[in-house]
Length: 280
Length: 294
Image (tube, rainbow over all chains, first blue to last red):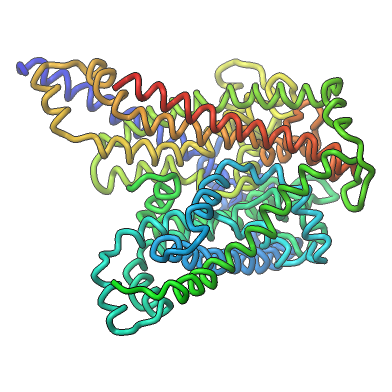
């Protein structure tokens, strides 16, 4: 490569990097704007010009959101449902993934294909019969009712199977020699060797459940049983709209998942790439 | 190695049982029921009379169903390919960066994806607010007349498509980055030695080697966007949802607002079959294309 070409390359390289950076800032700007607006007093929010920083930052919108809506209750519901779904889903998927990976039993291949095929099924087409089922079980407006249709994540089984497949056979053989039971092998060898994947999958399962909208929206009609993602869109004031207060409710609803992502960035991106069937 | 196969089967059964029980109850049973009640005139809750193919035949003359199909197709058109291209461009830009800088820029692009749809809705409803939205100040400044984006029939779906691309691009970006990382550096070094231009390098190396990922992203996006409901429902609050009817919304309206479980199920079955057929078909087509390339 001659010198001029090299220079041109770095010049264009610099331009591309600068464009990417500007683009990233513009991309995230609505998020910034939402947060900033939620920190402005009512009269500042509706000023007819752009102020990138509040003149008198205030938490009054947050206080008003917490005291005038049932946001606290919705938070409890969301936390309970998200933790419940995560613990149950991870546990049953771990067991099932282990059986498919390590044990030989009739119907194993059929079960594996069933799990792979269920990828294609759009769960949003099942809303009618999920509703009928949960209504018949008497679980509408309850945590269990919100949780039940969300407990199936075939992808988590698939990821577990792949990771259990990779554990060297020697560990298993040694344990079998020592007369260890299958449960012992699973919980003393396979699970501890894959804590990383369990953590990653748990975090994204929590995020998915926290963010779910359609089903929690359909299965709950009583305000005090709503999850936060549904609640903040369902309750409007009889006396006009308070934009800043709605935005502060939105910030509160998004905060746990945003923090989970920022704290566990690597784990979250790893689990999400894995869930699409790619080894990161 | 000796294995006690009877014990093994028993253990396997115990391990598989919890998943299988929930799977049969909350997945297989509702699917079978959906097909069954689509041939009846059942309300949302309760039994109905067998009506044969009547619910399906009615769809043929149902203008609202046609609108739902058309709007869903329009929405898919505006999100799947543009969204994939935008994600690819962003991934190409981000993949050039290094270390912490890269992680920070990626986080800026990725954050929207991690947020619940209702937060995305509130943020964009505010940003594009007709009276006070910051986007309208920008339009004023550019001398373009303001648009009541989510109240105008022409702008509603394109705007929701734009918001959806913004919301879901992070996922596709992540997949593209994983794909770009797996292309060996030596190939690029060889291309640089041959004085290959940026465009040639992209067209001859990056694009073909990235194709498996691109096809994966396209499939995932297509299936995701066929199921569009949340954003359309939320942005329609206080507006006219019938103008922006999409398939899942129609299922919701028929079943939960008009109490016609059987007819709603017929729409749901249509969507169900559509998604299954499209995903199988697209998977096969993309595989064929991939094979021809080799």
